[in-house]
Image (cartoon, rainbow, N blue to C red):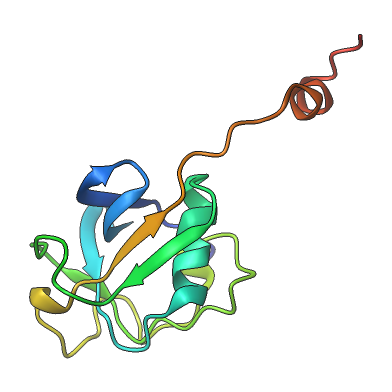
Length: 126
């Protein structure tokens, strides 16, 4: 059964493009464990959120630990996926982590569409 891409957000950071990675599964927000977390994984999160490029893939306690379920562990992205849920992982809710191991991401910021790109998207002719 195809579920589509799971929503992703960054929480408790300095803005929309900085914070602890949270993913929505079964209508509940949860966190991602740091095992195997690297820049390729962060690239996918920044891309999915429209937040530009990666500044850092955080595996430390820079952000406040989350609460609720830990949805993903052993995440392994190639960096080409369009959503974090497209990356391989241990299985939804399968982990051996605690919330102090939650990952975070810092991205460069929102990517704004150029006027030419907007013209292409909306078919505006000059």
